[in-house]
Image 1 (tube, rainbow, N blue to C red):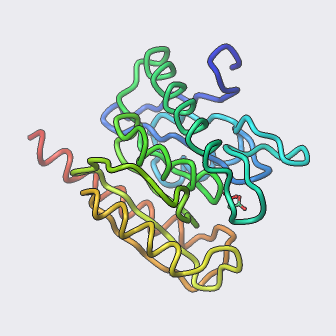
Image 2 (cartoon, protein in one colour):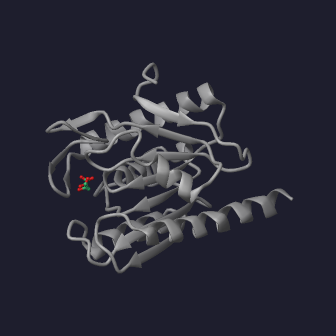
Length: 212
Ligand code: MLT
């Protein structure tokens, strides 16, 4: 679909109580990339999957960077706001509650920025190989938002201390953060699917208990 601000795919789910997922791909990915991951982590949930609007040597991303791991933070702010607007428009179009972000690498970083700048856009986030997107994030209230961060112990791109700093910042803002570090690198693995789907099942079970 192209008539919302971002090219995207929407796959309606058949489990209406399931929180929809907002799938955010890594550098060089597109709107189709994470659909299988989303289906594996949240079977039956609706999937909303935009394509990043920045091109770096032809590779889609969600915001500009000056070098690997060095972000153009004005652009991060602007693109996080644009993405939050896209989510609002898509929610109206497809009649969805606020989605849980599932982001990988650059997609995890923009998801973290949306949490810090436009928290109302997301029900929570699963951040696979995330790092701090903004050195100077404004104060925000993330009370009760569930966030899972999954880092790779051997990730050559993201320092453990950087991912830890993100976890601390989100927790200080009130998010309910779980930070797991797996004995893997930057690439996704089956262990990500296992950890994320177990965590999400726990979140959904708590949600149902609260409703009942
Ligand atoms: C980023 O640019 O968001 C991170 O360096 C991860 C990446 O996309 O390589």
